[in-house]
Image (cartoon, rainbow, N blue to C red; front, side, top):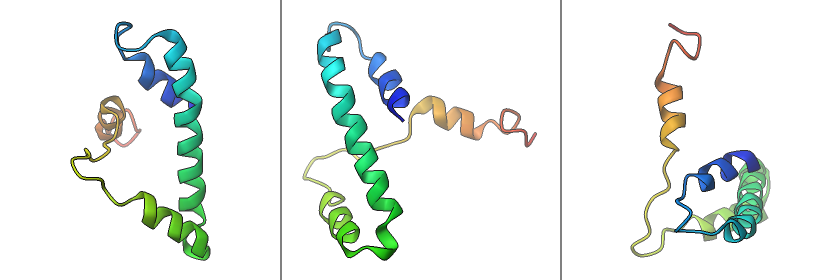
Amino acid sequence: MSRIVGNALAELRHDEFSDEQRRRLTPIIRNAIATALHAFEHFERSEKAQQFIAFHCQPSAGEEQAKLLDYYVEFWNDEAELGKG
């Protein structure tokens, strides 16, 4: 999981974020993803997880919807790569 986040952050140009900023951002993002995955995993049987998801999944005004990484979508859609072609 953390490698996916790190690789995605590496795509930023060096003038956007310094290496130190990336090092600080990566664990924050990684921990947020781990927390969200845990809550989703326990969603059906935990009221706490349901409350957490309900609170955090409400879109903020002007917030962009999250989307899948482009290279993952290309891989997913490539039937030959997935052994289906």
